[in-house]
Structures are given as structure tokens and as C-alpha cells.
Length: 204
Image 1 (spheres, one colour):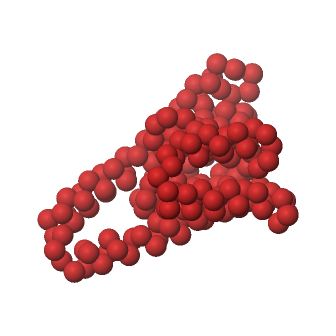
Image 2: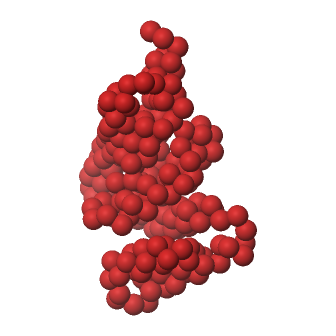
């Protein structure tokens, strides 16, 4: 086995292990561990760019279906453009596409399977013990944790702006959307549509 393929298997294994760990920490959904995905894929490993990361998340949120869709898109980008992947499949375009699809499926499986098994068993146990004070306190305590993780996600998604003055527009849009979600009955799809238009116009 060549050094390039050895590096490929090692890095893909590291990717799967990391996403498996994040799956077990995804309280409130995969979107809540997005900051660590960004740290790992963009800042630490430099497998994809911040632009690719943001585009994958934006596309998945705009598309119909679960917000988990951004996970296989991130895996796709890693398999297609990460330096270790390009080195292993150099000169073989069809193999690059196979690797991209494989990484997409592996990241999706690593994110879904552990958390699904844990959630099913934890929910069954919590339902059997729903009257216990500790169970009720635990459920109440999760709310601020989820909110904090979502705020961290919003911060990461807006952090590509180079200065405070250029970040006011996405910050204002985020605060406005949060207010409308809490105080009105405007459907979320309308907000996604407005966000898409504002982004297309280059305002954020």
C-alpha cells in the first residue's frame, strides 16, 4: 500500500471517529455540534475551506428535509477536496467521486447511528422514570445547554466576516429572526426565503 493510500485510510478513520464522538454530544440535534465540526474540519485539519463549510450548511438548511443534510455534504467536500484525498486519487477522476460519496455516507452513518441508539434507549428509560425528580431536573437543564450550542453555531456561521462593522448585518438578521420565531406565528420557510434573497443580494 502506498503512503498516499495509507494516509487516506488513516484520515478517513479519524473523520469517522470524530463524527461518532460528536454524535454522542449532539444534544438538540447535529446542528448544535457544528462549531466543533468547523474547528475540526476547517481550523485543525484544513481539509475544507470555511466557504465550503458555510455553503454546505446553508444549502442543507435551505433544502427540504432534516437539518442533518449538511453532514453528508461536509463528508462529500472532504472526500472530494481534502489534500489527503486528492493525493490518493490523483489522475483518477472516477475514483475521486467514489471517495466523495463514500465519505458522505460514512459521516452520515457516524453521526446518525450512535445518537439514534443512545436516544432510543435514553428516551425509553426516561419515560419509565418520568416521575423521578432527577429526570425532570435533567430535562429542564438541557434547555439552556441547547440554546447555548445554537448560539455558538450562529457565531461560527457569522465568523467569516473580517471586521465588526461587516458583521452587523448577519447579527441583526439573526436577532430579528429569533424575535419573530418567539413572538409571532410567521412560518420559518418565509424567514429562510428572506435570508436566501438577502444573501443573494450580497447584503450578508
